[in-house]
Image 1 (cartoon, rainbow, N blue to C red):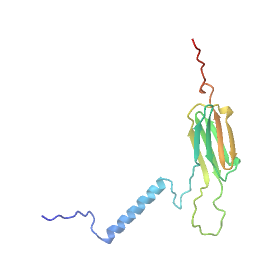
Image 2: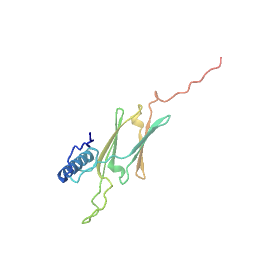
Image 3: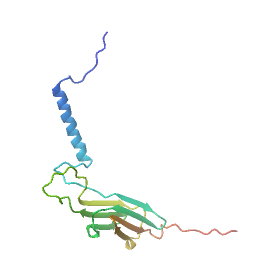
Length: 152
């Protein structure tokens, strides 16, 4: 008995062309779903953010190069810190063919849940060299308190 290799598709040009078209459609579908815009879509971006906690506060640092402090809005609602803004630009060169366009422009919004309760009235934000730093003091009840141990 001879072994026959299973071939689900015959070796024709029409089938390989159809598979290439299906692959192209799937690539476009995943690119759109994962945020790689097509020419007809508006580009969407979100700034990179670092957040850490010290004994007395929660500190957030967001990269926002090319913005002025007037372009950035901060708000706290409950345990959610929201950063909003808009980076203008993208059309500085007229009548040119672009080889690359990797910088992102447009509106952005990041809503970040805070890990602990903070004093919303004492939040301080500074913006320097394209980095927004937000210092959120913890509520007094959450700050660790040292307890002295008496020797008997």
